[in-house]
Amino acid sequence: MALPAVVLVLALCLTGVRVAAQQLALQDAAAAAARSAARGGGTAIADRLVPGASVSVWRDGDLDCVELTVRASGLLPLALRASSCALGGGA
Image (cartoon, rainbow, N blue to C red):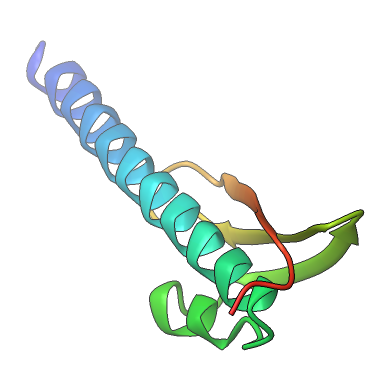
């Protein structure tokens, strides 16, 4: 009788862990893409690190900023978003 509830709670917990791991990977990819954009190398690294993510790039003063958005995989229909900025003009 309680087994379906236990399975549901376990599935939600595992989904939460997976979404958290995806968010960390997305943040790392946004930071790498911002550094690459600041060096003039573009944001292709974001596609390699997080396939299927939409990439948005903008400049804020001396900073080159990147925002990545992707749908989370799992039971919950969530959109994950991460942004990062890097000082432009570096070599």
